[in-house]
Image (cartoon, rainbow, N blue to C red; front, side, top):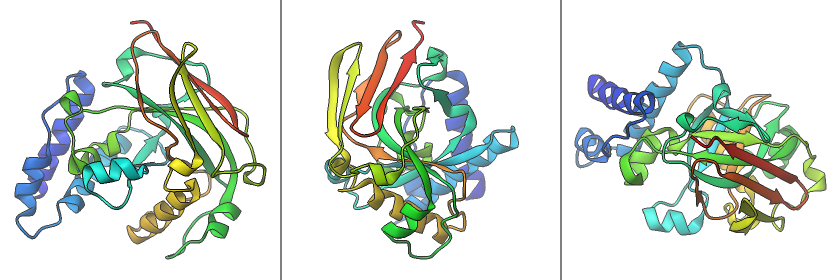
Amino acid sequence: MNDSLQALADRLWAAQQSGQPTTPVRDEIARLAGHDGDALALAYAVQALLAERQQQRGARRIGRKIGLTSRAVQQQLGVAAPDFGALFADMAFGDGEEIPWARTMQPKAEAEIALVLERDLPHERHTFADVISATAYALPAIEVVGSRIANWDIRLVDTVADNASSGLFVLGSRPVRLAALDLVRCGMVMECRGDQVSVGAGAACLGNPLNAAVWLADTMVRLGSPLRAGDVVLTGALGPMASVRPGDVISAAIEGLGSVAAVFAAS
């Protein structure tokens, strides 16, 4: 079993390193899980093997991302909860910093609210108050999602194994305290070189981005890896994803948080 999971992790790793997407992994994971097994747990085991390999190569884990926070996407994939992936320092880009196209894999962009923690979240069951008290500030963010699976032919097990389809992320530079934000009603507009490509609001993220953050905090404690002070948490998309091409400039404005731009190299 461990060797088989390692082989799947190696396959996803090779796809990332070569820039050549691979075929879906869901069928292999389903066979390993068997009729009554937990395929999702095996997918997270593959994700953990990938994260371990990155850390062995010197990558610094700096937080987590939350995916599948849209009710519509959950219904599409037949799931009732989000998923999560790991964020590493080499995935982070600054507002307006050029992103080499070679660093992307079938990229799509989505606008999110990032929380930066100043205290640990170690409890078995967290509340909104716990997350608010632990958050130093929020930042506007653009997640550049990517897939090592060819043609985005993914189901839940594929995306979880593939680090929740994580790619890169861009953080804004103007920190805002949560007390100054309406996390539910804050509107979001994302544009590509001035053309509107996505609109949404905080309510699109599980009704409130704090719902996603509480889910993640509880989940990580249950898995023995609680969120810590200094962690960045990408809470989930505020609107639909938009495809990205070389040379694109994607900007997102979130009411109360300001704006952030992801600039992609032309080649």
